Amino acid sequence: MSDARRPQRLHIGLFGRRNAGKSSLCNALCGQDAALVSPVPGTTTDPVEKVMELAPLGPVVLLDTPGLDDAGELGAQRVARSLRTLEEVDVALVVLEDSLWGPPEARLAAALQAADVPFGVVCNCRDAAAEQAARRLGPETFALPASIPLAVCRLDGTSTPAGALDEVRELLVRLRPQEEEPPLLRDLLPPRGRLLLVCPQDGSAPKGRLIMPQVQAIRDALDGHALCLVVTDEECGAALESLREAPQLIVCDSQVIAPVAATAPPEIPLTTFSVLMARLKGDLPLLARGAAALHSLRPGDTVLIQEACSHHPQEDDIGRVKIPRLLARLAGGELDCRLLAGRHWQDYDAIQQARVVVHCGGCTLSRRQMTRRLVTARRARLSMTNYGMAISLAQGVLERVLSPFPDALAAYREARLDQSARQRHA
Image 1 (cartoon, rainbow, N blue to C red):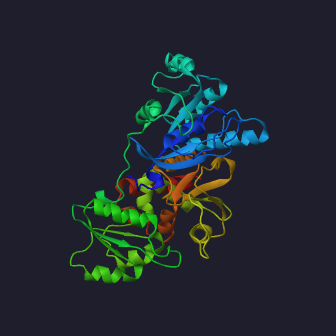
Image 2: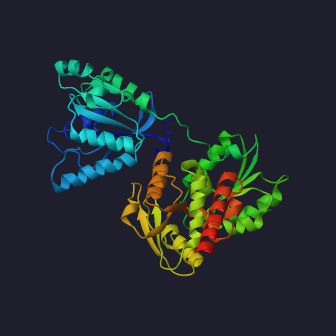
Image 3: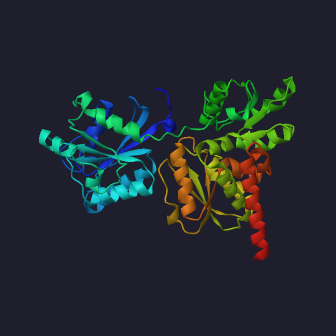
């Protein structure tokens, strides 16, 4: 568990007023001065992240946020950043000074419930009398449902005794979502199934290593006891000829899907790393329906290109050059493609004229973070698909790469029929 990547870690948000003890709680949980602690209100001006192991939860990311009662124009921006963090966390702790609960906490609780984020209340008490008073309280004191758990502690930065945090750890265990991340590909193969991974190593490939989805696929194949052969696109044909028995699944990079589809016999199931990531991180049928919306693009339409990470742009960058070029060819003319880069949540409502969101594979996002982006797009009445499906559609092979996933293929075909019906009645 100690080598878990950031997207697989439980993201825990610490929220509350200035000087409520959020940074002290962060430091006490991780046992070091990860967050600056000061009696001066507003010391935390941006969300602070700490990646760590937290027994008994395992790998987590702690997010310490600015105070919800920050004042002034700059303070309002800090509060907005705190609330934006709600879109990134799996669980949240509302930290109170003693048992002080008022409008800022009530608004936060409403926002957490609206975002479907499990949360609990931590009373950070200054002295024994305040601690005794807090222990007599319950969720009803704060006008919260009885299911909201409550913990009491007395924090003093990193010198807080370990036992003082037992209630907080127990609270987090209760809050932790029980949903397990689905497999990437091993459920698509029988025991000792034959898998061929096609991983091009061109100028955009990182030197000396593989990209994250490729590494995940190899590890998932090993976990599923599959027989895994990894080749570049140039060796794909030779690999197929050398095998005594055909592979039972081929997975390739989206950017070489056309030549691989032409080389691989049609009876061999074929998909892409991007489609696998779409299933792992979100709702594959919904993203397949979003891919169908690309057929209705017309020259001049606005398309949002969303990347979850920030990287140095390449000469032929996929999000900045390749995807816009493919979509323009599909639409029959140039499109207004707007790039939104970064791991943090984006407000799709702010761009009213957009037609569709084309998202990256989301390998740096947790499943919950990716699902929230899908929900946000749907709320803004925007179709969403991802890079790989857009590339496969533009290359004319989307139905083939969706064939290992009958529900997604059916969703795509249904969306295409709906489009045809609307066009007939237009």
